[in-house]
Amino acid sequence: MASGGGADWREVSQEIMRMVFENAGFCSASVVFKDHDRVKVSVRPIIVRGTCLWQFVRGGQSCNLCLKDARAEMLSVLNSDVSEVHVMTSDGDLHCRIAKRGTVLVSRGRSQTGRSVSKGHDHVKDYPLERYDFSKLLRVLGFADGASIKPSMYGKYRQVNEFLRILDTAIDDAPSVLKNGVFSIVDVGCGKSYLSFAAKAYIEKTREVTVSLTGVDIKEQVVDTCVKTAELMEWEDTVKFVQSDIAKFRPDRNVDLVVSLHACDTATDEAIAFGIELGAKLIVCAPCCQHELQKKLGGNLCRAVMRNGILRERMADILADAFRAEILRVAGYRTSVMEFVDQEATARNVLIRSVKTSRRGPEAVLTEYQELCEEWHCIPYLAERLSETMPCLAACKEDNGQERSQK
Image (cartoon, rainbow, N blue to C red; front, side):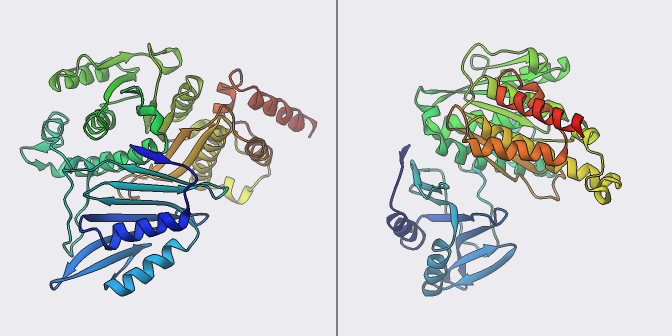
């Protein structure tokens, strides 16, 4: 993996144009814009009646363009307010992110020899788990029966593949995590560990490093099931599962990635606090229900919303994830909140992806967090959990508490 910082956007744009229109191995490209609710444009080559066209998809609407029109459209897209660009070809990948101050950060991935180019008119998903032979993993996890994915497992299969795409991008943003040749994952509230088992297999295949996986769950039966899965994969030397409350667990090595999928209520906060306290380089979590914060919301603020149970619940979901993202930024993580999978697959489809960049975020981020606390007259559980590790959150708690008591 080669990476660079402070690249010239014009040169990067020209490289992207060449990859999309002059590379016979072009597979797909995606462009994400700033400050537009993560609106994305996707591009892929297709064959229609023997003619090669480029399909652009934006907000569920698609159009198929000839070379001349496609080049003009792509130039227009790249000249817009771009946040990220990811291009995949059979020769290799390019990922570009434009930081807030306009710095252009570029990383390039090595050739993916197992990737094929599909130009069929009917959209064929490029699933990471189909780029290489992961048939044994899919059988052991119960996803596949022979050579085909079980219909009952297809939703989970899509979820795992989307997670791998997100993880791929996160690793590109933090290439230093691969320097030691070992990548350490801790799965908090691991359940059956579908995501982490798939991540181990995929990262080892694509990044040529050894992945050390530790799963933590409070349920003994869950741990026993995961141990058997690791044995079937012959991963006993690099995988272990521990029955423990995450608040009491401490790993025996540095942690590169903390994963938490749909941990209920404050369990997600415990996973985030665990990652922050250990200085994990990457934290990826998909939160679930938010009962703890929901109980704190009240008073005269937004009574039109708060008096309706379903609206109160959804507001708590939004606020809890906003608090989590802000606290991660205060802790020095570059954080994105995004849609994980389609709403049809699960109502809990928000994912928080964080990449460690510094010891502490800028003062403006702490101010944003404090304003959020003051506006909603509540302190999130994660701030209370981290009050000793991050005194700035504790100070905010005291100020907020005094202000409320005076009122």
